[in-house]
Image (cartoon, rainbow, N blue to C red; front, side, top):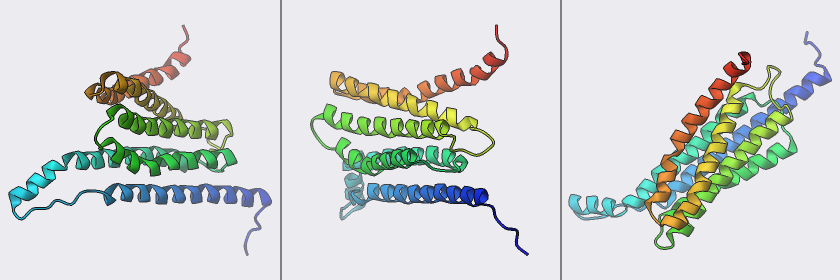
Length: 219
């Protein structure tokens, strides 16, 4: 004999299923974005081993950009993967923000090709950095929407929400700062800003870790 399911339980299962479908859709789009990265990879050519190795060296910039693009998109997906297992329902705004974030992921292979082109370095670099700013900012808004509308489970918002929000804001700030630096230096100075991202994230994480202890031991 089956136990009848109440309308509240049915509604909860429906909302959870909708959140799961959105996660599956996100995974599919990320897989497509990663595939698009590889489509324009130049094929090494040459009649001898030395010639083929020379061809690989000639296209080293494109291969490096592919590796960078893969790591960046994978990092964005991992951040999403950390958050959405806790999501139990959706809002219209959350869906719209997720689509905006996905748009940036799909645009990233094109931005990766742009940054490896020749000429007008500040514009090419600025375009790629702006895509990263918008991707990180939209993900920060996703987390804010989940927390604001209480779209997580009954156990309350997990600590990973605050950690991911801090990480997204820091990345948006670092990539945003690199844009004017690219126009001022027109060279490696702009890339050095990106290298500062791990430092900024480490500092922000340590500041965040101290907050609970400071709150529990007021001076």
